[in-house]
Length: 401
Image 1 (cartoon, rainbow, N blue to C red):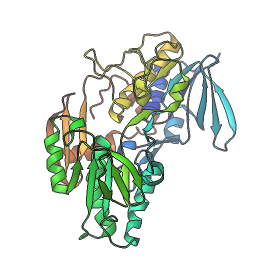
Image 2: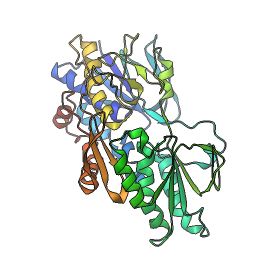
Image 3: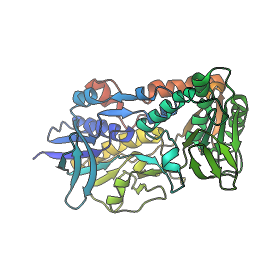
């Protein structure tokens, strides 16, 4: 009797889960278990690069890869999960309602930026959360050249001084000058609730952020938050007004709303609590991975972050373990002791850190070279070759960036 592993999502967690599940089935010589991925597109969207230009190119096709390893791709958007009945309802590429059954389910539906109920936010603020929204920002920046010259036209406000906000802001001076002219007087302002520049990323990395911001001309407003947004700028919570034709929102991220249909405990970001094998606690047939999994990386109290770095390792483990659960063989507990960051700081360079305390190891050009290697090679899918792809899905391969 054919059994079925269904994976919702084709991001880093979902793609690697599919490859790793197929790898374990292959190692055990099992052809009575099928693996399917359901997602709107058969492509890996390289979300860590959405702050860059040419964002429409930041995706990698997956159809040939899935075909090479025997993963079935289902084009559609899942919208209803029946845990008791072990089935998922989705709308296919033509908008028709469909249902697919499963024996084991892997939730890999990702996360999205949180847009709170602030006046004018939805109407006037951009984000770099998805290709479509980042593309709208890119087209908007290019169109600024057609507006009359003004301080507001030449100003970008980035709400949020976390990883995404800093990388987005650091690229903005160059992006604005590419649109408005190399001699344009531009302003880029980060609005952050933290008490210090780069506070959310820790004391160790903060000096590099301060130096880079000064060199790039990126301003910070700390102990501040956006109260409202309109077509001409933002008003801060303290009443301060900043005139700007471009506002980018990067504050907060939350796990996919689909996770709410799976009974279980959640963290403040909506991620499902999982055991050491990434099975959702309290569920017999559901695993979670990537940005929807609240998973311990070690025994010291650290948990996976909502990053590509953790999603890759989580995906390899969830795929292996969902297949192991179905086959009745020993799983491989998820552990990811090494944690690094590589923060892009635009024309200044980058900063590379190691450990949860973010000890700085490389800065400027050396770190930038590493960042470019990560963004252009390391995080992309393996070749559409069965042997190469399955070998790359081994959960014991360390993820170093």
